[in-house]
Image (cartoon, rainbow, N blue to C red; front, top):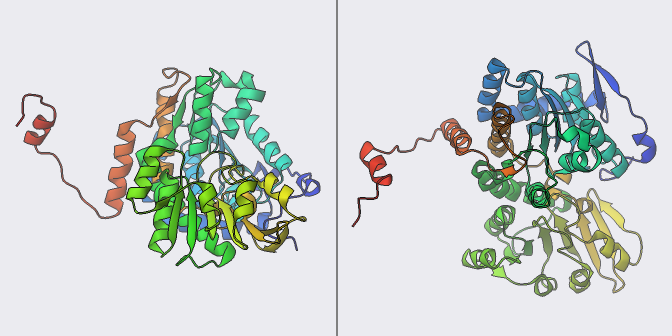
Length: 445
């Protein structure tokens, strides 16, 4: 039996079944196994219990049919939480195609259930090779969407570079992750972005909670599932102190780790130091770290010169979107022989010195590669914001230029207010006197 982290071979990828029957209708798909659908449906329903805000968005969309007749393509992590977002969009009238945004982040049972229980076109298989990944991506592109959703900008990038004729028909797009926003802003700067994009990742209801608490918890979860690693007492190196890095560092500190932060941003470095973490360069951290986790959105944060300095048995993983934060090619070059898989999602590399370095989830995002990603409760806010940003784009079709936009504040407030209500929390309101004071310049000392 193939190990869990093995990619789909090219041979198996060619077993491309374009149509499957779902509730009497033929649905385009490429998934691992239709027999997984019952398990996937239970998982989707379990996540739905903890997504009350999205449930209200779904009710709103079902009544308004705001997406009726709109073709959508979504390149997202195919998880139970994503399934509930896609169901919301479909119930709002969208003709939607879903493909994976990462070869290791698909939950195969969820993909099967989306096809067979909900009649949604899905092209995603956990462990698919690069050829299959891009084949699925192009299938989503060739759906000729009017609205796109991205987690990493691969969909927008493919449309811009390979299918520019489709760009003129796109009303707008939503981007879910830091890496994608970085790429999109570079596209805007270079003048190649052809349609408006909402940076959902930069929403407060996303990055303050999803990135900090979601990534923080799920990254630790993925590491422990893959390694059975004891956090307490270990030297754990968090590369990057953005919202994801903060969340990971906080969780590890809370579990008793000695956390070291590496940064290139002086302001974030000061913040990490004042939050009680040791701050140093990766070169300084390499000899003393027991586990290294990259959360930067950049490439080659951990390189051969760092691997050479690491302890025997050091563990390296990534929780950024792409698998380039760790220089895996560089690691393979300095290793004595081909890596050996020692347990699910753990590959051993033996260096010429005899030391072993252990790489988790093939260097891909460990929280989804080796675990289940963020808890549904936090994705409730992110995906509600995602859905409402879609509604905003459609209502403002033709009014937005080819730029990267922030999520409107009214959407942020609506989502946060409903989330508080679902948690049984009430907050104060301004009195008329306070409102007047906050909008006046006459009042002073």
